[in-house]
Length: 168
Image (cartoon, rainbow, N blue to C red; front, side, top):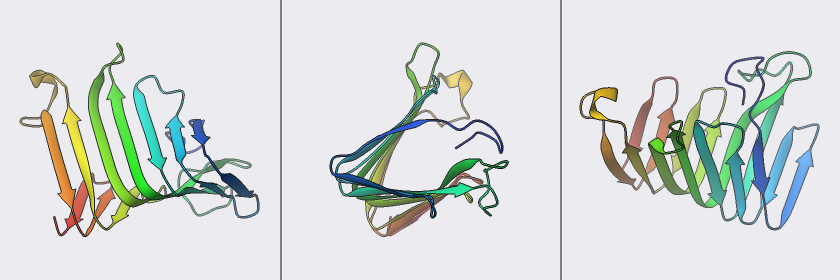
């Protein structure tokens, strides 16, 4: 997705083992069996998503109600659904390439909606949050590592930065 409406999007490399289908009318791509997606072109970020069963990517075109898509002929991300031992890793990197912050997430299924910047994981999962910044560059107490496991589900709302867990 583009950092702001109408901006240039960020390329993503997707590798799959079995099949890929694309429906141009529905703007829907499906990748099956051992799917690996990597964000490209961001020197200050590292982002990967891997899933064993399949990845569905729904795009939104001009005239769509999905936020973040700007201008005629523009296509952007609407939704991602990953299934089967999903692993996601995201890092913010320093200029020397070392991680500043990192998140690792593991779950059986993951859904992300771009319009609401919402991540939902039904069922059990676990997450590791790491903050490598020096003491003077963080809010009090935010450095270090935090591991979280849940049984019932996770919902994360990007607009507020709030997470909720079921059966924590």
